[in-house]
Length: 64
Image 1 (spheres, rainbow, N blue to C red):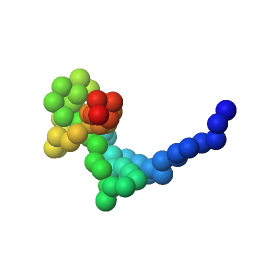
Image 2: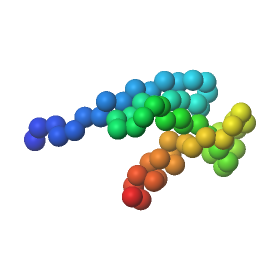
Image 3: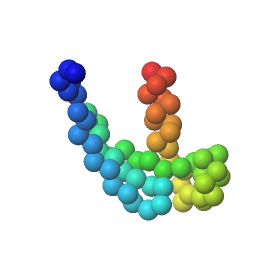
């Protein structure tokens, strides 16, 4: 096996329910994660405000 090439230094803080903040490399300040639309409906959550889900970020990353 080869040596590790990259290891991300990430910190995640759970705020309440589905809401989290993540500190990511090369990004100023935290990134917020939450729920919205069909995802909130699926999990039976009524968000105080709609926020991008982790699934949205994964889909954007694989598409880019």
